[in-house]
Image 1 (cartoon, rainbow, N blue to C red):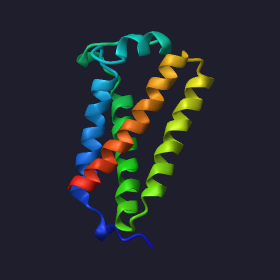
Image 2: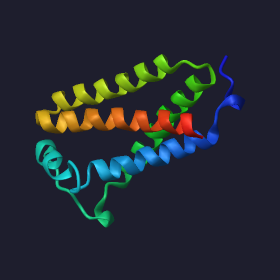
Image 3: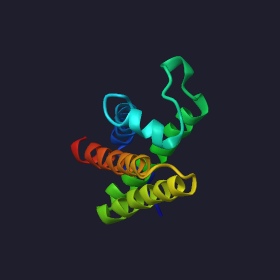
Length: 127
């Protein structure tokens, strides 16, 4: 049975927010945004035109992954956290292939999933 009382809630919260901010930078024109948008068939918009439902969904997904990582931290099960991150990453990878994104866009999405997970693991280790 999972012990939610042993979860480091600060690390879960910080990991969620940090991974969200990493995503903001990851998909910005400063890093991979322009070429990713081309390969995904979307336009980069200004902050007032961001898809709210997608942003909320992303935040919920990041929180869920941070919770999985937080729970695995309570039992020193880092390998489970790594497999959870890889599962998310390769689901994103396959979805990109099915939606016919460019290879570049698919790899950017995969990279984001992995970097978000590593960010969450780092939050657990540091806090």
